[in-house]
Amino acid sequence: MTEPVPAHPQLLRPRRGVERTTSTELFFDLVYVFTITQLSHYLSGNLDWPGVGRTAVLLGMVWLVWIYTVWMGNWLRPDRAPVRATLLVVTLGSLLLAAALPTAFGGDGLLFAGAYAAVQIGRTVFAMWAIRGRRWVGDSFRQCLVWIIATGLLALVGALVDTPAREVIWIGVIAVDALGLATGFPVPGLGRSTPERWEVEGGHLAERCQAFVLIALGESILVTGGTLTQRLDRAGIFAFLLAFAGSVALWWVYFDRADTVMRALAEAGERAGRLSRLVFNYLHPVMVGGIVVTAVGDERLLHAPGHAVGWADALVVLGGPALFLAGHAGYQLALGHPGVAGRVTATLLLLALIPGAVTLGAPVAVTAGAALLVTAAVIVADLVSDRRVPQSRGPRSPLR
Image (cartoon, rainbow, N blue to C red; front, side, top):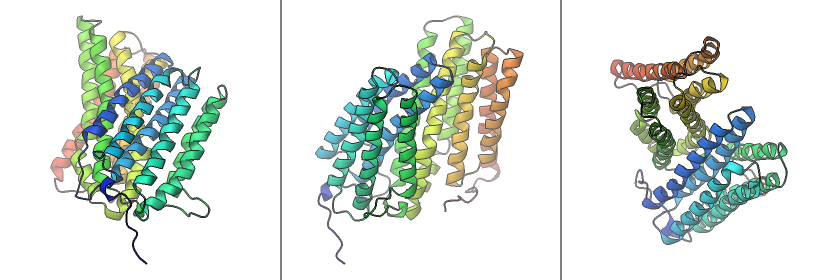
């Protein structure tokens, strides 16, 4: 059987090791600085269980737009004019999505869902055209398009009904997408896609997700710096240093072994597709969610460091780092890296501290200090582990 010839070979990424992030991709990421800020402010203003749930739904849909655009960049060259133009259109759609986010469950639901559907469907149609003739990957896009159209229409249906039906339908959008990705987007007559045939360049995907984590951490820095300017007294400066140290701790946990992660994914071969699906589509939004919640906790800390914590305060101050560490534990486990037990232990400890802090009426600053100490303990455990076994590659990944 003759191997098909790509219709647009000039648009395809060469496979020359880890391809660095282009300026076009970085420009696209700039919109998500605004998006994360919108999410953080939405959660801060709706800090109850319905608000937490809605924030999770919005983050899930935002993440789907971003990560699928990143996947497109895994196969196509962003420096080519057609791909660049498409990325700029997606950037505009993402900006509309972010602008509508605060009132997505109100009057701007149709704008939010319309931007979501237009970006998801339009980008996938373009990718199908650009990658036409490339065996296996082209088939995967055709199968994916059917599911993307279905979830896009489902998002629009959700925008046409009132809450709580809208929340339920948009949760369905995320669930259907997750199911489709997990099963290879099966379509009658077209079969299903398998991760081994996705020709993934895992190192590039790792670098792109690292950039998004930095964007999310940047939101914490913006909150910290912006709030400090409103309260330049000793208590405010102390709270600022505590919040900044917390951001540094999360950054350290994630980026201490970032080069090792990139190298492992770049060398994953046929496993790269399955591994990337797990760590980037499923686990990274958990970590990003933890950072967003932590940013809200930092805002509480900076506004009232000496006030006794209530349930809402404790949940964001302690629950944010717990959510981040839980996601990072899964990340380490999937990659076969050490430190999983320490992260799980730290997550459980942070969650156990929540009722204790509320019962004792601990000040917000003390609670934030406890969260910092637990996160710092994870860093110290990693350093000790690396020093004891400098050549260790950690436990074998269950996906190997």
